[in-house]
Image (cartoon, rainbow, N blue to C red; front, top):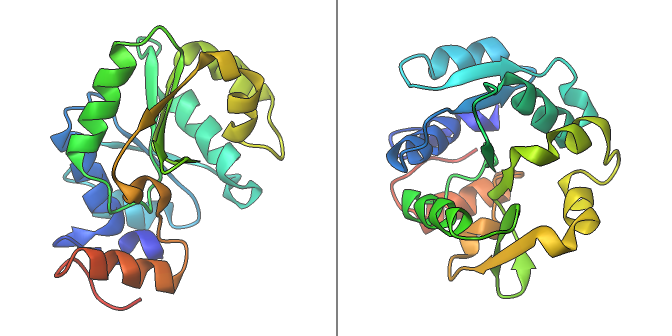
Length: 184
């Protein structure tokens, strides 16, 4: 389970949640799949809820939908961060939340050297669209459907483009942040 691999004195997912908490986010929902119980137990001491996506084999869009359904009604904006993106820092999350609060657009995406990355911030008004559409396209479909609503935030941080999808990518993340983990 890549999310439980060692990183920053905890695990990949533990570090990601810690980054979000350090950034001051109020409600954190970690969407889990096949290893729900193990991940929920691991995160037990943190101020984060776990929502189990029973349809995890269907892909990331099913996890996004599970997370949206788990949010309280009062939540008007969503920051969607990948669980396997341990290189991101709280300063970037704070910068993105601040930029989103100062734009009239409903979607904010970080861009590094012309390439869009994660996390993504969006207004909850798009929830019904996400829950019912974009099969096969995922949230790229949302960005394509509403180009006028997208604000790109140029960042000088390539970690918005990096995740730990493979053993090699995890090793690169560990190498970028010495002392953060061990071999896959």
